[in-house]
Image (cartoon, rainbow, N blue to C red):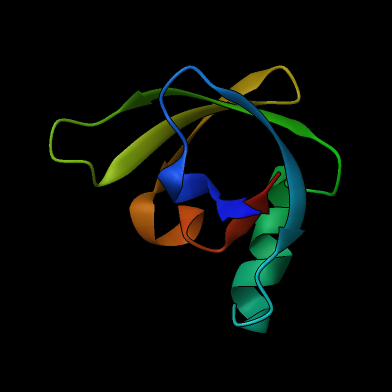
Amino acid sequence: MEKLIKCRVGKLCKVDSIDKAAPLKIKRRLLELGFTCGQAVKIIRKSLFGQTYLIEIRGYLLSIRKSLTDYIVVG
């Protein structure tokens, strides 16, 4: 298992879980955004300095910070 932050651009991954070290507020936010177990996630693009990621999940595009992608565990 690896973190979403380590995945390559264009690679399709499935969400395994949200890291147990994540604060409750962040866990809730990620679940509300659709990062539930078994969902397919694809990194479309990274920003120029790598601080934001453009991610496709559940048929929509989502831009999230690098710090949040560190809490998402994919398989």
